[in-house]
Length: 496
Image (cartoon, rainbow, N blue to C red; front, side):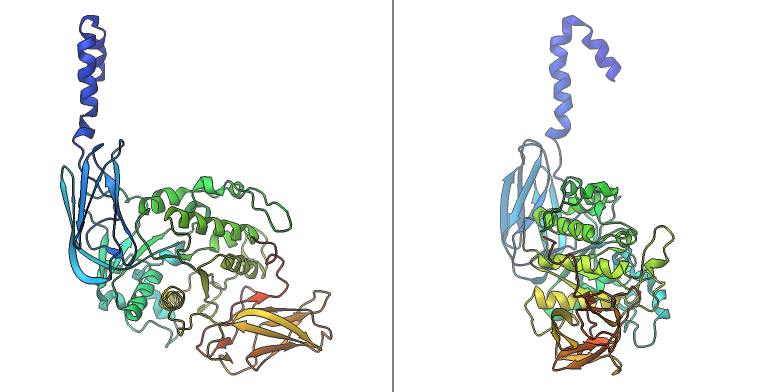
């Protein structure tokens, strides 16, 4: 065809008549373009309550588009490139399965839509860990297994799931992608995401939508828009770190294919379970700045600087056994510390899972139902303001040197500090000004922990759980584990 056009254009006598015809045919596809929706907008979806709800897509340039849902009728005009968007007014939660009608030159009818709470969960393999791996639960000790096998018994039509597959996020003519959380539809879905949704549903009694966008083995860099990583973080002491983008981590790879296609689908918040791949690189403060960049950039993408961002502090594991690079037993605690640094940002929080590991040679703790539940407790407390709900174990707050002991106070003590097995608290160490840490005696007194050692007459610093294999018995009365810490944290006053 191109060859034929070329031959015609060489005929000078008719060129001036043919060119306008060719131009007209070039624009015919746009002139008759159907309204198209991104894959995230489809049958069975949940729309976020109490916020403006974004509906968007493409059509012919300057085409008039209307969206009708729940008594609302909105119209707009597509721009010169065919892009259009409409915001529905905030709505109350509803279990009524309703239809959304989008009209342009064609009409699209989306069915079985609910209104409730919508969360996006992302990360690497521990977030991706699918419910089809239920057979792994058989290895758990009795009493630590999930109470039911949800692949056989799940029947939660008011919980809707969307699995973000990076190669299948193009618009779907059938508008498929969302599923009801019923039986086999959960096979490939994130176990953490599902159990979060399941527990949150019991607490809020509103429809829950959960989106899973996770890739096994992924570092954090691919989840951040590449341009956003072109920064040189500046510490509070004026020292400048090397450019984050220099870490050769495929910046933006999964952001472009899995996160960008979701924007600006209206969400309540984010759940993040990632870090193992960066920990294997021995990262600490650099990871904290990358995580900060991710949080701030995603919030900007969704135009909500206060959107909740909750993360899972990765589990104990023998990183020091890695043959790829020299790592120590303190590599993981330093990484935990880097995860905690971002809690300086508003509306961020984390859960600790040091007690959920059956073996420190297993990178993927299988007790995902408990992890999902703890994230739900966190959201219930922080996002939904049920402050009576305890979501975390003890978190280091302050220390005070008293004679030859150190008194440590904690937040998140719940109804009191405790020992899980009623034995002396484990994994505390203490040091003097020489910085040599030795095992310490730790006792609970007046909701504080008193730490001492006969080998340190003039104590100066304390560490807790400062080892990759540490699984302490230190908890609050609600059974949640204390978060590892060191009072000699070199980064806390430098990170900004």
